[in-house]
Image (cartoon, rainbow, N blue to C red; front, side, top):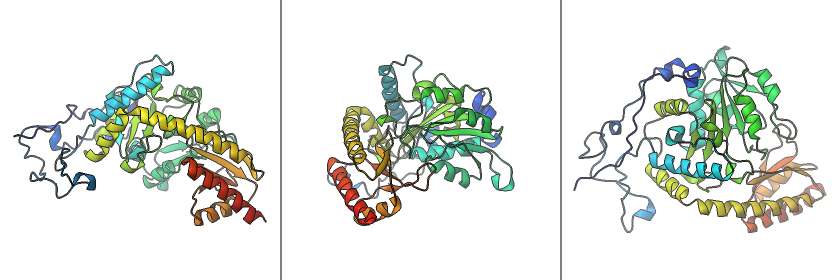
Length: 399
């Protein structure tokens, strides 16, 4: 019989948007005629329009080979719009927001971009909104608040975009007045990581709103929530529907335990999301990824159970670290890792432990993080091994 493709109805919108995105985006992006892929026109019937191989795939993922199961029709391109995954993400985040007492408008699929991890979204946002030209003294800039996730800086450098920097306080809080003093007309976005990496500290809504509502800053506020599911602060997705300048980044790589499928989201105003969809590669999210993503978002009780277990282990590891005489400080954590400071030789300790098979991350070169190590919460056995080897190694190095 005829194979019917099940694709989404939404179409790319080529008109220049009005509103915040139209004021901020690069003119070449606003006037872009998006690539029209075959699936934008027809998505069912005898499909001889996309130069696919109708004879079928040359192979399949190992687990689908025996018995042979090509139910996903891997010879066909994936849906460019990922409606199903978007709706499932909205349902989950809206339910979480309501249970946290939020009664504002819900987020909808037109608020969601699906990408290859949140890294794709970071790069796209910089490409859409920031004019390059930093090396020749012109162009736009992003603002970061170190210590923070390293990819913002890398993406800005790749795109020849300026980097403005207002550090966090020593307690890892945003310096909101200083940020608003430092922005220039070229500042197109402020990246706020919440919970922060490596800080593990959440940024309160009040700080996000001070940036978003300020009359002194007209760019976007990007809230990177990779670790939000471990946090006691609710997700800023609850703020998206009421603001035209807040974009929230999320991922399935952390609490959902799906780093291997590379799936992330930008949740923001429809005009910003529309530009991201216009600029992205048409088939950026593959079928195997969206299949696993949909399953995870349908079964969030597994996620919630894993979060509870992770937080219980985090409390144990924190208490153990605090009991060690050579540990000077264990920072409060809203994520699935702990940042802690030792009296001395953190890099040597980290290196020696890694060589013996227990790998953490030395963060001592980051601002306010001298002699600091960042350790991810593992299984109970892994955590015990880490603590045991940490004591042993520190004693060897300090002696």
